[in-house]
Length: 416
Image 1 (cartoon, rainbow, N blue to C red):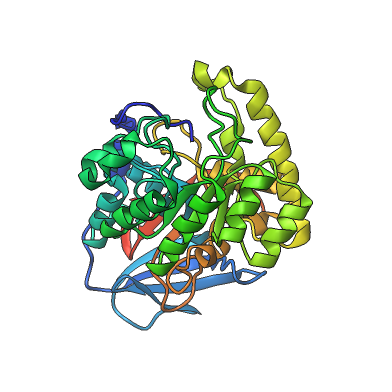
Image 2: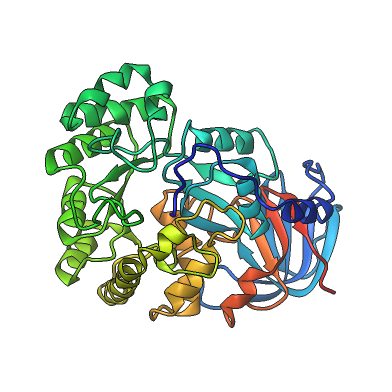
């Protein structure tokens, strides 16, 4: 993520918010079933779609998927042959505010794993979703990352010492050490986060640091992962190099974020440990809207993109599970999981494999597959509907016509 140094983030486009509000006539849960008729169902768990189906949603869950009409009363929507996917999952976001969360959902992204916010914004967004706010996606929170020296980190994360004054003694240390790593994990756990993030390598997105350089050392990494495991929390590792990734995998992390510089022996180690790769490829692309500081890093970003694409191709060949993450704050014009899905397909994944990386496989990775990532009875009623078949053309993912979040209609654009 091209993270800003400020702790406040500008609001997303007012035009986008007005569009969503106008096209979303209801945010309240209807006690009656919602019946979607004449819809083609893409369940990522299956290779072939189910054509001309009826989906019944009730009490926030998928009640049934079957051919033929549903013999019950309820609100009916004739989708006239449109195509339904489970709500998309972005496994690497940095969503800091409600406007950005709404932009996520307007794109059909109904779940996101946050991997760093200030002031536990991700915990707050999770609370809004859990209380029933239909305009907020499901958020898995991680709070603050575990770093060797939080004071030197850019962007400034000194807010951790305001949220946790008991950690203030760490400000004067050159390194947090194993004990400090455990304390930061416990501080996050006290805020009931869902994941812990650790930095095995330095950042790539600022000129002052080299992504090949280690951040946490082996002892600090092991201490953080051991403490997280003791508390029942999975761990995501920001890592680029063979050394950093290997140390993180051997420590017991569940996911490696980025991994752009890893080679085949390290990928085999990941495969053997069952570690998931979240390559965040699209985040290394420069666009006309890229800020000057990113353009100054153009040679580095181009190298990381080229190497990262090769790592993904090798990972697929070796059987390392590849999960989609946009590494985005979802502010206006920032990249999205749809960009990442298309990027992954360009490395050799089939279109359906790329979609699975942001649905069923992502849900498995994030340990939410009992509720998310597939369309079948009993799952959460998170759906996104398109006029065309996204498996045939991934660009279709950019234009959802219906987004349902926990059984509640958030976005409805009629294309007929």
